[in-house]
Structure formats: structure tokens, C-alpha cells
Length: 409
Image 1: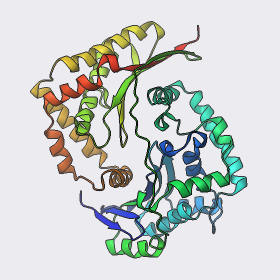
Image 2: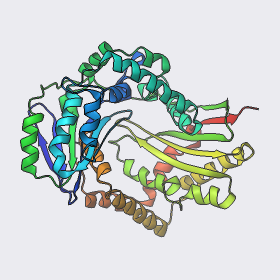
Image 3: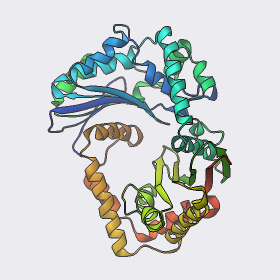
Image 4: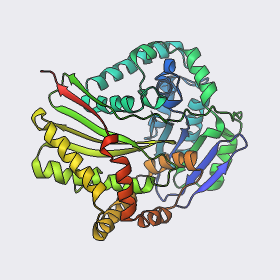
């Protein structure tokens, strides 16, 4: 990947990938997420992501929302367990407008009390909407189960009780303690000259005061497998099986990405989809996923099915996991799996907004970005023996946790 990397004296890093397009994308990716909250602060990172659009020292909320929308662009934000992203998409001639606006709302928001009161109701409604959706809720509940008594297990949205207690003083204190200039990346994908980026960075970002201290995250080290069954007001049975997996810096991460893709990734020819949905018709939705965090990871299989099929479905999932533990995949299967993953990655590069966000996150975690050829070489180097080794480690049936939502009888 061809990119330019600039580091300002205050620690803010700027990464830019040229792209031949009339549309450009840029945004701030901040190395602060819900895992950086204390229990009593739960939900405050997500709350800030909402409240950041509600007014700055020179703009009302109305002017913020219209600044990019009025020229046909889009502005958005989201929060994860480890990051907060605030970004915009626009035609390339409005790059300065986007940079100035994003800088204004990130560094100069004032968080008016009246807007905070209104946003509490919005976020509480969002929490209720997740509770009403078992497909959404089971993922959050499973993370809470696996990462029990650890910040990674806290819901990104917070709880109704913690959200109600958020005020302006707590927001400003959290920002002081957690938003540090050397943990902020400004990422750009677009046809923007480097000299323009440097000039505008000097104009808008260079003057931001340096703040380069950050408390260490609490590492997760206390996983214990558990099984929970809950009765819910649901029409079908929802189930998640999973285990902790590899963190961002562990050598087996790339091999496990490939293994998960074989098992239940997005393609219709995954083993779970072919072996359970297509062959038996037990479930409409079945998938496996792998979430990577800085110090750990989470693997899980989700399925939704009629209650009468749940035991058979779980048995079939465990059979697929056992096959991957016990039997090396053939050379031809391995080659096909590699080509599929490489193709998926290549296709994803067409979405420049996602590329922009991924670059920012990559700089925060790894301090560099691999080009596609380097990534593909790492995938090509994966062996069948490696896949079997990671399958035996992560798919160990004794280490699997489960969470099942069953219909109320």
C-alpha cells in the first residue's frame, strides 16, 4: 500500500493513501473505547461519540450537521471496545472543510447541558432497541460472559443506570484522562496533494496542545469456560458457542483469520453454511466470527434455529470443529481457502471509507500498514499444520463457552 505518514510535534499522526477518485474520506481514529472506562463510567465513550456533534465553541449542532451535508457529503462516528472514530466522506475539493469541521468537534466541543439531557433519552432508547433484538443482544451478553469482571465485557452502550448519571463534568474529565494526542491518528484516502495535507495540518492540527500520557489497559487473563441457558421472549432459539482467541500481536492471528473464514466466514461455501444450513435446513442464519483486540481475541459461532433443532445444530457445529482439529485440510482445499481470503481482501480495498478507517486503526496498533503484497505473502505462508494447531487450541471443546436464548415455555 502506497501511503504517506506524517507525525506532528504534538504526537498526532496523519496517514494518507492517494486514490484516483472524486470522492475522498478522512477521519480521526482515537485509541479510546469502552474498555478504557471504569465500571461507573460504562457507556461514556459512546455517549461522547453522540454528544460531540451537539455544539462547539463556535458552532451549534445545526451548523455542525449541515456543514458537510450541505455539499452532499456525510459525517458519522462510531465506538468500539478499543477505538472511537469520527469521519466524513465528501467530494475531494471540500477536504479543508471536512478537516476543519472534524478538528472543531473533536477538540473544541462544549457539551451543552441541555443537549446532554436530550441525548440520554436517545441512548436509552438505543439500549432498549438492542434488548428488543435477541440477535443483537446475545453477542453483547456473550462478551460479558466470556470477559466476566473485565472492562472488555462491558456493553459499549453502557447501562440505563450509568447513562443516566453522565454529566458534562464527567465527560470533560474522561476526555482529559483518555484522549491523548499521541493516541490519535488522522487518516485520509483521496486525491489530495501531500503538500495540501501538510499545509492544512499545520493550520488546524499543529496548534493542538500535546498530551502524551495514557494509563495502561488492564490485560485480560482470567478466562474460564461456562455455559448459560436463558429463557427469553423470543420466537426461535439463539445460540453462541465460542472461546478466547489470539490478540493483535500474536503470531497465530493470521492463520486463525484463515481458519475462521473456512469454518463460517462471509462466503456461502463456508463449512457451517454448507454442512448445516444447506444440507439440513436447520437454520437460516449461521456464521462464525473472530474479533481481534490488542491483547486478546474472541471467536464465536452464532446460529438461530427452531427449538426442536437446537441440540442437533449444536452437535453439527461441534462436529465441524472436531473435523478441523482432527484432520489436516488437503493441499487443494488450503489453496482454495487462501485464494478466497485474498480475493475478499482485494474486494474490500474497493471501499475507500473502510480502507481509511482501517489504516487509522492499523497505525494505532502496529505503527505501520502492510501493503497488500505483504499481506498476501503472509497468507500464502500459512500451512495446513498451522491451521490444525490453532484449531486444536481455540476449538478445544473443553474450552468452549455457550450462551443460549430459548423461547419462554
